[in-house]
Image 1 (cartoon, one colour):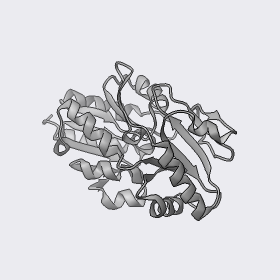
Image 2 (tube, rainbow, N blue to C red):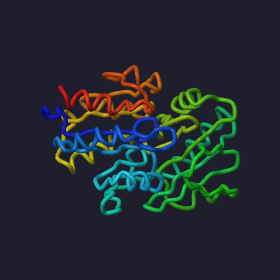
Image 3 (spheres, rainbow, N blue to C red):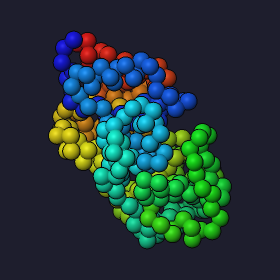
Length: 268
């Protein structure tokens, strides 16, 4: 086996490392284990906040650094502690929200609170994703703003995710960042925050540079990570915006797309 050409493998979770049932295949686990044995580090870079990520990392036996919350949180899985955490300015977020609603009408809202145990709050009409991830429903809008937040989630009853993201960016792009992270998941983030922000911080801690990094993803929120890394690989199920900027496209998350690329690089 020749030396693996990268020192860091960065993988998104949903639609990338995880299959639809939130499992990681044996083939992909084996490929990642072979990569780490060859001297590279694997780092998870996800839009999920720590409380929605920790159980997956624990199942993988993952003890290194993970980037969570679209780059807002750098988390040490082995020590179960936050190394860095960036919160959303709630005054700016409220202003941005009012401007977006002035353009498109009322939105359904959810929010992710800061911290290792930060709850995800979901308001009336917000369509929760199917699955086991916990959330707390709220009725009083004041509850949304009562504690520090890492992000807001917005949904519109008629607009598509692409349309809502585009209009929101055009309306409030100078106040906050707006990203599409998955089906039904449009997020308001601190201005300038991206997966690349958190990944660069984590890589610095590991002594690894962008030139040493290969990244895997599936959604437009992975575009900054691809721009930062030396090589970006879009999954076969990836959004067209990410495919357009990827260095290559592999098979889907259900077809072990990460393993397909890693095995090829390991055998080169």
